[in-house]
Length: 83
Length: 199
Image: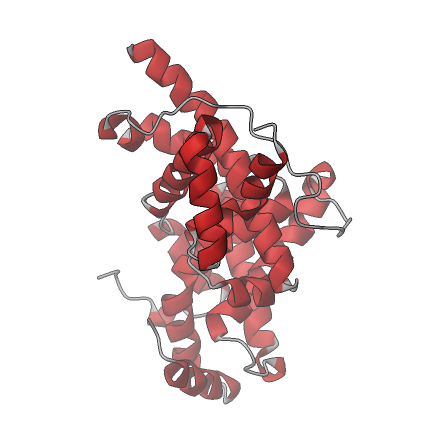
């Protein structure tokens, strides 16, 4: 990732992966990726990193904490078991 | 997704002192506020305190809510401020005050160049790998972590994230990009080691 073109790609990598780069910039990036293995690896592993985070299970508010939350807000009378 | 109209009605009822509306608001928004608080604070007890503080502050300040952002975004903003106050108190070294951010400036050059994408899916889905993903987020600098959590993990838009964190859209984009690169670097170390161990 030593060239000015690599640096240019690095700066625009998120825009490229998010589909926010212009058609012209996308074409420029893809041309560069065809000949630069390091940048190809960074793009692929960055894309995979984003996907892994999107697939990460979401933590849930523990039932005991939910109970305490309603109590602290003086809303216990509205507390129904979680469906 | 909850419509704006439904939230608007809910806000009006809360303003009129309707406790069932407060409960509805908590039921609807506490899961998201908790997820953000947990990932900002890094532990359940502190996250729970932040959630309580968020709803107490929100109900107290409901008359000041102007409706420029959605209710969820406003609650995330309160939660972020509450988390930040706590982090400044307990871990001041993690919270910097500088705000100079220029795209490309100071951006770490990737050093991990092993392609680990082809590992078997089970390696990405293991509880150990998922714990590593969560740990990597916890270890991001606070400013990058807040953007990453809201934008990538909670799915807020760039505009909503900017509103929740009181920064510009450009700052959100810069921080998100830096957070992703730092996480890629960190995960590359982990998965490369795993790939080498399996080879």
